[in-house]
Image (cartoon, rainbow over all chains, first blue to last red):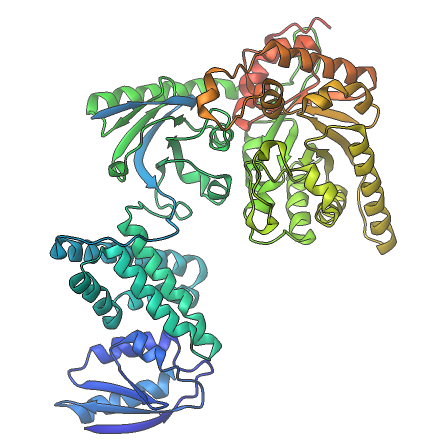
Length: 85
Length: 540
């Protein structure tokens, strides 16, 4: 299991469009990616679940990756967050 | 091939695919299903259709408004594919054995409530997106062929009935014909078909299964052919071609004067219901606009149109008509034209109820906004104002007082405005009978034959059952028209007809001999009427 923290800087938070992109990205991996924030967690392949976390600008999210190539996936996820959120 | 017959509203031939339009049901009903597997497939298929619709919308929006603004459709597609959302629907179908519509509606409600409860404004607003995608799937499940406001290819629209509020936003370029089960020859669908010059049939027993099928509407015989044989298709294409050739011949009349053989000039104007209809007016070479129904401004909005919105619409029409007369009728809402935000009470007898000028004289703020816009727009062209549903001289005097107030206000504010001719619709028997007195107050009369006939004959024009009793040529109507013409002329007030009767080619000669000054007809009738005018001796 590999985890990293990320502080969301997008003005609206994890809103529909980046959440959609995130789902697309996460669906491409073999590893299971979980996003946690404000005491709730959501599978990164589930759009509505991610949006229902209600992640706002300034919130810190914890991203957990579990799977065979978790190192690599975690690195890619981190890059995704930096670029999109 | 199957054939069905109905009553024809407008002669013409249409060949194309059918789009079956059904009003969205307010409430989705729950019922138990037997075959879970089949219901599951129904859902999957509907979801695929909904996704296909969203992809098309996305592509269209990308081209028209750019990728960023189109993203909403992409998000909707992803929401529809969301695992939790789909699991919830599938579980409900499987475990509770409910119909797919119900499962989708319930799941949609649950998910949208979850979002609605979120504190952040952005996230709580997403409840609407979920409602939207669920409605889309339910709509597909209910057998709706598609969105009539977003048509891809030209279609023959089949529906139980169509309300003015539903037809107002339709992309009219894509409509080949109407086929409805309800409606009468004088209903709004009928008037719309005539304005657009497209064949329309009413009283046809319609079927949902027709959706997507090829069909031919023959507006001459009143027959609808569903999945026509090659022979019928061939015959109809021939008929359509001959019709086009006839219309071509009429085009030779463009640019010619509307003058009788013995030299009397007739004002031949056109009726319009929208700014975009001006194109048809110019194409058909009408000398002006005899009736611009301003209702569209109110029907296509969800709030009272502002003075600026109205001013822009009136100014645009006046400018495009470049100095030709544009007669704008003040709002004629009520009766069969309902707008939610007016909050009109339900009436037992709306045709005789709170409508048109009665609303304007009671809620003068609405009226004044429209008058300000009209007077300001009059600076940019030859605008005349016409008031509907008048029954007394007192009403006209009251209107003139309000117009004077509005002018004084504009003057005080230093806002420029133009002078206008003012006239009234003669559409109540009271106005026709009192036309001698009314003529002293106004510049012109325009006879609205549809309402005048319905009130004089006491026949509800929305009731198809009464079509056999409805005699458009009833001598009582013709006598009233003669009275109005004579009274108008006695007081220097010109008289026209803007109702459907004005376009009745069998009466054109009669009207001219009666002394009519103006005929205002749907744009497509301008040239056929011009042809008759030019062959007629007025005898005056």
